[in-house]
Image (spheres, one colour):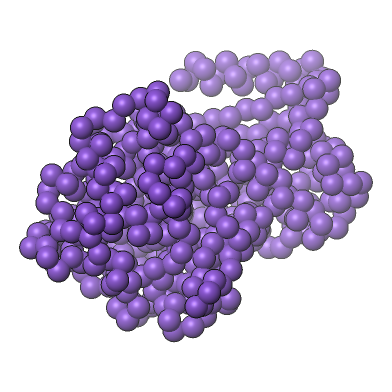
Length: 406
């Protein structure tokens, strides 16, 4: 690895010495003891950012868009870790992300950016049921709105305002050329227009197949290119059967199980009784007694009925994107399945958290738990729990299968 990195940098310096116009975008993210680095070098004869998607890719990895030049979109959404945060912080692990200042911690886990483009625009459906949007509480209506959030967030990338972001963009001559060509001359002279163009570019990159290849073992099995094991097949049957499990109540978008390009989320909002992550609260400076009210904190859905509800996440790459829940409170996928199973009144098992050895901690918000969905299905024995986990592992994109635990 060290020799490869050294060779890459020698090549980049050589290109500069030859006076070829370059653009280098660098981001380093620690992941499982490995370092991921990207260097993009293109010449004048091959324009570096001749499409919105290519410009968005560069911006996605550009740490210069943060106050201290230490954090990019890719810091919390690393392509080496299924577009989640591979970094670990003292006391909280990977449950929440550290900000550009090196010490600020959030209160929610960074969701994967993979397959995020399939979330519908936030709206209120019939009977007042919210659906779609971005972030755990849907406060960003579109993918562009989501991309606009982190650079200005005071505990994330910390930029003071849109004008400061535009100023950072203008320092890069290749960016100036690209913004003028793709969005019109003078775009960077208007802070609002520049910021909108930046978020549009990042969103365009996130809509490319880089983020949603649909090439997991599950997908390949649908195309006849792979065969599920007996255990995986049992898990598949259990997952899609409302008689045997409650999984597909929320984690199925298509009308029937086995449809191609399934994203494994209906993009609704539910309170599943997730307990507080006490380790995170002890380290991030939360006020005593703070309650994360989830969807209720979204101005478009700020009713008591939405307290404690969070967006149903995709299960794509779920086996390699621990920790779990909106606050990263659980570390193991089998724990999550057992947590859901505890709601079944016919289930004498799984009343103890395997991660603490004690009874499950109480929900942060108890009043709005989705009991109808959670209590459906049959009780799961250990064999079926393990089969479900085995099936969930088949939802891992091919390039991340090496991250799966045996």
